[in-house]
Image (cartoon, rainbow, N blue to C red; front, side, top):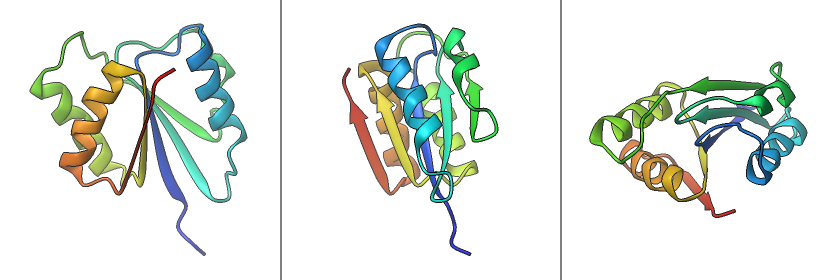
Length: 116
């Protein structure tokens, strides 16, 4: 049996919005035989959490405050290493800044950033 590819989506929250809707659609429709999806919300959860298929996707809220601080980067880096993430996909500037820095420090093999 092949190991599933672990993909982590990084968002600020799962509030109501187009980007958040896109992330929910990705995790709910990606092939679960190939990918294991996870979402971390940096600041808060939100109403779109209810739309995520929780049998297929784990959601974790980090409750990170605004700004870029070393402890934020370190916390995301630890998450990446502990969960052996293969792909990080950050969405929008703030998550990109924190997530990409953390992924580089963690040695995450694939880094994807999208501005929405």
